[in-house]
Length: 64
Image (cartoon, rainbow, N blue to C red):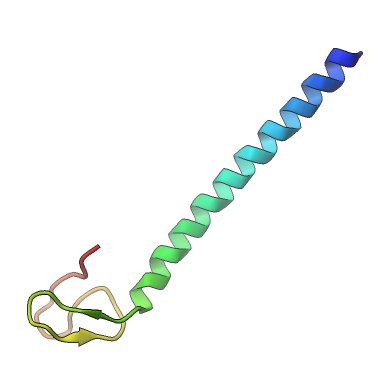
């Protein structure tokens, strides 16, 4: 009986860790979308882009 309780506890902890990692990956994707709202300077033309992932003047993509 003691082994069953230990097994169930270990399974619940493993499930909790798996859920935590999955939610964390979802949050990382949300942060990528928020980075499109940050201001950046276009490396090609020097224009300060206030929002977006592409320069509105030379259409250069935002560097990562």
